[in-house]
Amino acid sequence: MIRMLLISLLLLADPSPALPVQDDTPVILSAGEESGAGEEEFDVSEYLFGHVGDAYEWHITTIREKEIAIPLPCIVIEDGIHVFTLHHAAENGYTLNADGKLVNARTGKRPFDISITKNVMGLIIDSILLVVLILLCARWYKRHDVLKEKPTGLAALLEPVIVMIEQDVIKDAVGSEYKRFSPYLLTAFFFILFNNLMGIFPLFPGGLNITGNIAVTGVLALFTFLMVNLFGDKHYWKDILWPDVPIFLKAIPIMPVIEILGMFTKPFSLMIRLFANMLAGHIMLLSVIALIFLSASMGPVLNGSMTLIAALFGVFLDCLELLVAFLQAYVFTMLSAVFIGLAHARPEHVTN
Amino acid sequence: MSLITPDFGLLFWMVVIFGIVFFVLAKFGFPVITKAVQTRSDHIADSLKAADEAQARLSNLAQEQARMIEEARLEQSRILKEASESRERIIAHAQEDAAAEAAKLLDHARVEIAAERESAIRDIRRQVAMISVEVAEKIVRKDLGGEADQLALLDRMVDEAEQARKPN
Image (cartoon, rainbow over all chains, first blue to last red):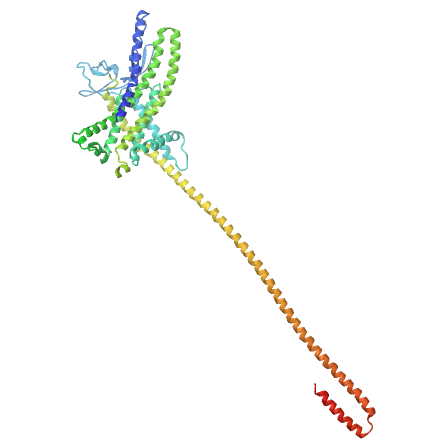
């Protein structure tokens, strides 16, 4: 458990080297620009957080000062439900605060805000695509006799992945009762994988930082927490509340406290790991691409060479992210399976 | 910083969306697929087992066949041996029979020859007797002149006849 926390801390520390570097650069740059022609300043911080953060609009691009963005409904509950787009926020008595969140214009308080933001919209689109994908695959199996035909098309694509996850990850980690949990674990795996991959894809429905959002990973971790604790058997609860340790460790309940803490740190580490890895990946990619814009004022030679380097690095990081997208989904699924497996006594534990 | 503070709205929607995705996929998606895959892998395992058994049966059959051929060969050589034995026996038997028959024939012939010879000797003896009687008659007819001579001759002849009859 301690090792796991350390790993998660290490993983959390991952993005931090990328951030300070980028924070330093604009300072030098803006100093240069002040003495220079006073061109439009490239705000790295806004660029980065605008991409990895959430927003009330889906900003796609800006062409000639004209912003191309998909307006999304803001839904606010405060003495009644208010639905409006961001352009009409002021008419409804709401404004954005420094964090870019909707607040009441008069009181400055955060209302009950369940707006369909960029990330929510992305989640909806990705989820629909994922459900359609999996149901199409399931339909193949309903319409064909598996004993007579080999899978084709979508089924041929997804089947090896499903079999690999179920047989090599879930079955090994959960144990004999794996069939009860494999639908959840497979759903989690494909949900994370699909959202990760959509996050790498830079055009419209993709390019969002969904799995690098702590609310999203938090809910995933919450589901794992529920799966572990709702279906844990009596050995699991005995190990938590009355473990097999010398009595003085239980009289002053040191071990139970640690174990109960462990119940929460396990899903917490899941949440942080996925969040940090995906966020770090996005920030690294965006930082490398930001080099192109940052070096724009440094003259054609520097800018050209920087562009080349950034493009090459971008290709490399995209490949890396492809790996990470799979790896993080795999790790999340595997650890969830392990935690579920730990909450179920294996036959050999019972005989002991 | 908003990056590490979970936003309530997103949290809410994520629960709703992931809940729906989970429900749909866990009910209509993955179980269908995993069941089908399981069915197939079971089928493959069964088929492999059946193939193994068939293979084993086949090799058993081959062994059985070899065994039967071996048996047949033994039987054949046994029959051949018996046949040659009985042939030898029959030949030997026939030879014995033939020898016995020949001996019997020889004996028979010998007895016949002996009988023939006996009768031939008797025949010759009778003819010699007849001839000697005729010769004697002729001699006697010439000599017999007187009565006394005739009577003496008669007595002598009776004696002689009696003596001649005795050994026969």
